[in-house]
Image (cartoon, rainbow, N blue to C red; front, side, top):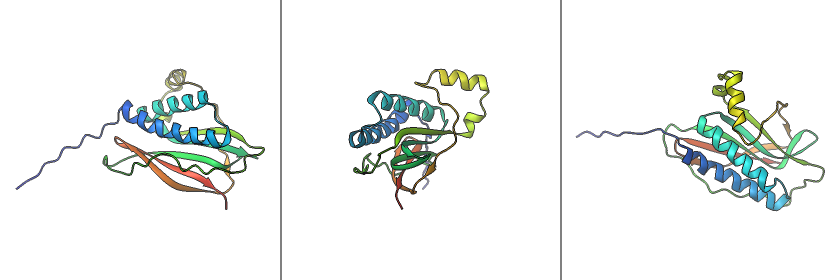
Length: 169
């Protein structure tokens, strides 16, 4: 007796939209508790992450509040990962902690591209960025006031987003 199995390791825009919607849901929850980011900014972040995931250019993106150049609670970081197979955890978004002190803090986002992005020519990167909802500028990666704790995994198709939240010591 023999058994053959075929596995299609494809990732489509539909998969990217599912993951983007989960990120947007987390951002809406942050907005509900802390007043930022705006609806239009959430929509732009969602559109950006969908495009970058779809094309394999997203490594890590962080959304949250900074004070004195450091991420503080409530901040979430998403790290994209290719799955060896299509099976993995697919958590529901949420569990953003209310009541963190954001006095004197501002909402920011910081994105790290994959090495695949680095392989594009500057002309290709420029053309690609023209189709995104906004252009990012170079900046030094902020530090963290506390530590990162992985608390959720979002999976669709052959990719996952591992979510980390900043926690206080």
